[in-house]
Amino acid sequence: MIKKEQFILSGAGDKMIAGDVTYDENHTNQPSIIFVHGFKGFKDWGTHNLVAESFAKEGYRYVKFNLSHSGVTLESPNDVTDLDAFAANTTSMELQDLDTAINYVAHTYPLEPIYLIGHSKGGGLVILKGAADERIKKIITWSSIADFSSLWKKEQEEEWLKTGRIYVENARTKEKMPLNSTLLQDFNAHKDEFDILQAASFIKIPWLILHGDDDINVPFSVAQQLAQVQVKAKLQKIQGANHVYGASHPYTAAELPQHLQEVFDKTLAFVREE
Image 1 (cartoon, rainbow, N blue to C red):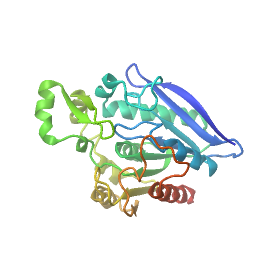
Image 2 (cartoon, rainbow, N blue to C red):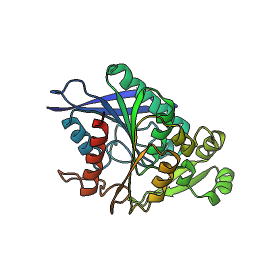
Image 3 (cartoon, one colour):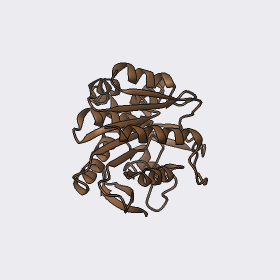
C-alpha cells in the first residue's frame, strides 16, 4: 500500500521546509530519491505527486520538499502566494535547504542509498551537491540549467542593483513576481562556488542528464554543454519534449503525460543499474 507522510524542517532564515515522503509499506530496503523543484516550482506542482507514487510503486522512497523561500505556504500549498519570501530567496538559502533535507533523510533512513533528482534550477543545485556530498550515490537532472545567472537578463543587473528589485512573470498566472537584488549579490559573492559547469566537471558518481529537444525555457544545447564537461555523464534526449515534459498545473489525469512517462522510465532504469 502506498503511503505518504509529511514532515516540517527548519529552513533558511526564519522560514520552514514543508516536505513529504511517499513509499510502499510492503517494500523493504528502499533507496531514497530526493526531488528538488525548480525556479517558481514547488513540491505539489502538477504531476509531482503522481511521479512520487510511480517511484514508490517500484520500491523507492520518494522525498520532495518546498525550498524555504519558494513562496509556497502550508496554508496555500498549490501556488506561490508569499511573494516576500520568494523575493528574498538566494542560491545560498536553497543549498542550505537541500543540505537540511539530505541530513533529514540520511538520519531517518541511515542504511539506504540517497539519489537526487533536480528539475531546471533544481538540477543546478543537484549538480553542486552531487560534486561535493559523498552521501549522494547517483544524480539525475531533468531540463537542468548550467548557469544560475541564466534565470535573469544580464542587462537587468545594473538597474537591479540600483533599485533593489526586478520582476519576473509567472507564465501560468501572468503575475509579476519580485526578486530582490540579494539574489544577484549572493550569486556575485559566490561565483566560483555556484559555477555549475565547474561542479559538473568534478562529478564522480553516476549521472543521467535528461532533456527535451523542444524546451524553449532551457534549450537542449545546455544539456549538451553539461555532458561536454563531464564525459562520464549519460545524456538522453526526450524527443519533442518541452521543459516540463508535457505536464501542467493543475494536473488531473490519472496517467503521466507521454514525455514524462519516458523520463520516469529512463530514470527508473538508471537508478536500478548496479
